[in-house]
Image (cartoon, rainbow, N blue to C red; front, side, top):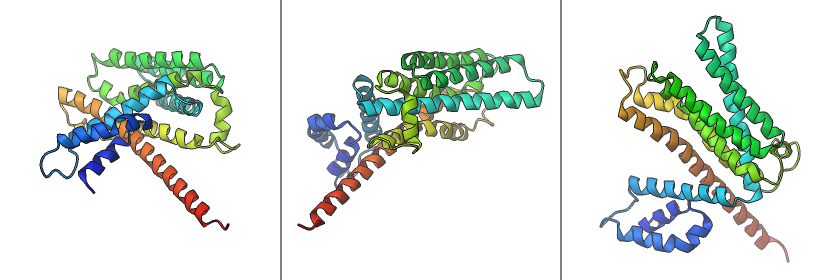
Length: 281
């Protein structure tokens, strides 16, 4: 495969309208800047193109997403809120089984459990704008939980990174979904297979679920990368690794999910076209 084709494959992460307008120009610039004999895009080029392409898609989704995308974002936001609430409630139950736990820890987890449970309930009640506002409040609560524990436990913010990252994703999805035509509760049965879902609806939800699932996976990866159990102190390198892993893995999961959905759609169109040509006259 030629270098130009590899660049064009990376550019596929950009929205279709952007590619139609700028793909040839961007490819020409990339080819002009390539080294003599270069066969593959550099890691920096690939990362930059993926990041900018996903950012362009995110901006487009926030500004003018189609109704299906808004509904998918609402379902993904609901799932994110349930994940956050479930982990907090599970920790509360663990504290109850242990018996004596520091009061500050119990209050911390109880507030987070309450906030995300309320967010999930409000989403299901169809109060989309209220859910978006409460999700933003949830992000502030997660941030406050990190700030409160920071003076005494330097590594606690690192161990809590996943919750902040997941809350940010959840809030973004619910902000996007605040103008959806249908409430999330009416879309959930279709996603679960109880009734027929609109064409492509489950695919959209699956794409948005990919970064949500990647966040809890990113936490053990982060702790392994920085050697958290052996590290004597939090350094600038550890903080940078935290940001890179917590942002990078969800973005990578989103990119892979988008690529898989596009490949599946292309295969489906190919099969449909082949069947049409093979149909008897």
